[in-house]
Image 1 (cartoon, rainbow, N blue to C red):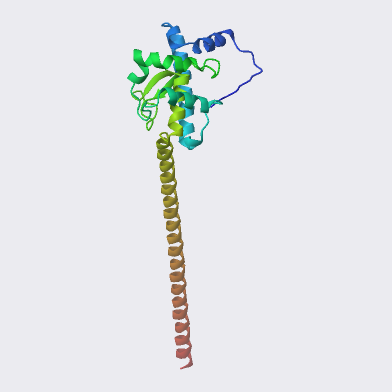
Image 2: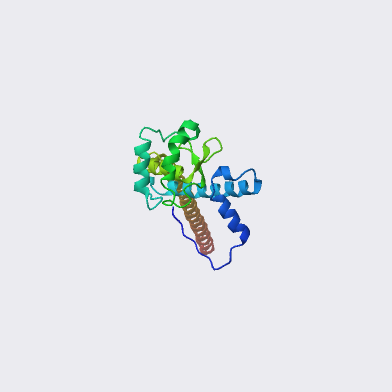
Length: 222
């Protein structure tokens, strides 16, 4: 999910300030509602992009950073028994958990861009980003858990579910087209039957006309 961007347009000082603020740890924000809103919007955009990604590509093959191997290795070395399919918030947010996570996170200061950037993290990896299923976490914590979920096969539940729905949708559309096609064929057959009946009626009328002419001719001859 690494992205690079460039623009020829000047960036306003206000945007630079917001961007700088968003790169700070959450506790540095204070209670500024504008910064909190900008941070939340940015986090939501990131979450939407990531969820679309694991829905459309087999997560096992995803590479989120240039140092995925290092992140995963360090993560499992430090959190070998941490359950990641369904996270317990206490394993991330309690004081004892923070003490364990802090040195892990700081290892990636300067290694992972915006390592401490506020990011949305799903608790149950088989579900989407609902209010009940989402917590805020530093970016490196998000990366560590999601890289592990991808490599250990937990995120495949999302990919499989979305792909199954897409296949079911395509199947329904195919059946609807088949029904429409069958209806069109039936209408065509009905038209052909009507044409045949019309021809038969015309033929009988001609035969009746011919018989009348023959009768008239016979009467005249007599």
